[in-house]
Length: 392
Image (cartoon, rainbow, N blue to C red):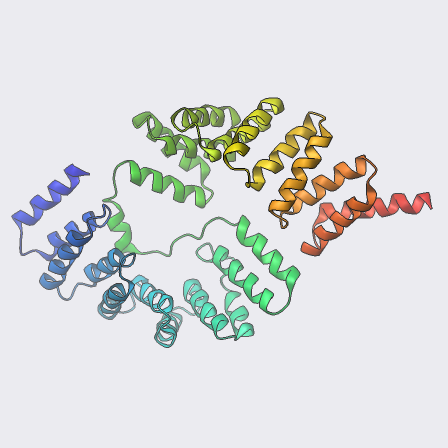
């Protein structure tokens, strides 16, 4: 990072009247929290290259985390200078205006994007959010139709659809949309060529971790694992790199590699609840259930309110034939998160095995109230009713 910054400063010293050199300096510094220096560099670039929208746009991005009002002004200038292409400055402007509650101007910008491209998913999503805030729910739903399958908007669109269905009183549809949102990968950022150019100046350990996290959010676990494997070799004391490598390996069903990485993480951070939780997943995948129980119990001491730990303890105890303990863990998991459907069916199955059919029926009924389409809960309840009919 120091080498990159110094070489860019030298370019400015060599060409102090070059807007391009000052803009590059701002593009480098913006990644390393030199807030005032970044602003000064971009201001020089804007002064020396007043017709160049790129520096206005990147300056807005640099400001957006600290001063959204000033960032909006920069996006406004960038959009005016850029025109229709690229569309990133106008989209950023529309989103910043909406974030500030300037809905009328935000709508104008979203509509401008839709005139350029009638099927512009981020503009449709932004306009749908405005319609939702205005109580115009049917219009919002119609706008979302083009967003639900687009990789740039699908996750956020399903989350908004859940809120709309909830407002309309359609609880099952709201729950289904919320589940879809939770299972989808993170939305891919809308193409922004100027930001992509600036990203080339992100270097160092922090950049590697951020890039790997982005890849994992997009469910590109093999790509993330390759990046993190290199990071752990180059920076073996980076506990977060070891953790993320373990998580990525678990997602790829490579438990032995996950275990190795997670034990490396726990050597550096022995009080890490998430490290224990992921190590337990690796052990469970290898059917080392007794070892997993020990790891999960250690994790519970660190974070007793984590539903996932109780759920996985319940599963491990079932595999070890310790049904009484499993029931207790599933009850704890259900108390902590009454919306997690697999807990209902896992607990109901154990209760049926013990002959406690009335409570099992109640649990399955609750699961189907949360999601009438849940196949496992429905099948278990139909089987119970069939057995009871035969007995009668």
